[in-house]
Amino acid sequence: MFFLFVIDVVLLGYVGAKPTTPTLSSVGQIATFIYFAMFLLLPYASRKEEQWLRARGLPKAVQELLDNEAASAKGAQVKAAKLWLGLDCCCQRCRTPAPKRNYARSTYLQRGKR
Image (cartoon, rainbow, N blue to C red):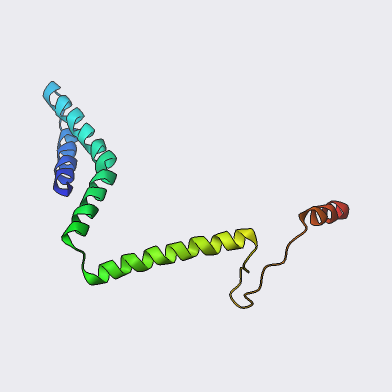
């Protein structure tokens, strides 16, 4: 897929540098379609390549990296949910629950100061 992209870019550069003829115009349109189709097909090709690599077997270091990344992402989601619910403090030192804020009172006090 990479080499097709390189060939397509070179072809588009060649067609753009030459004077317009009906043949080069058609070639340019086809090459432009291929150029944009490559970007639309890139996620699907990437997914297929990943499936192929996993079926073939990843190196041990890469597999450990993927496993650690998945575990840390899960941990980050849990921490964000706890912070949002007010079950965990946002700083690492105290590890005590964050105090509940009275937003209505703080808004009232801010209005009174104006």
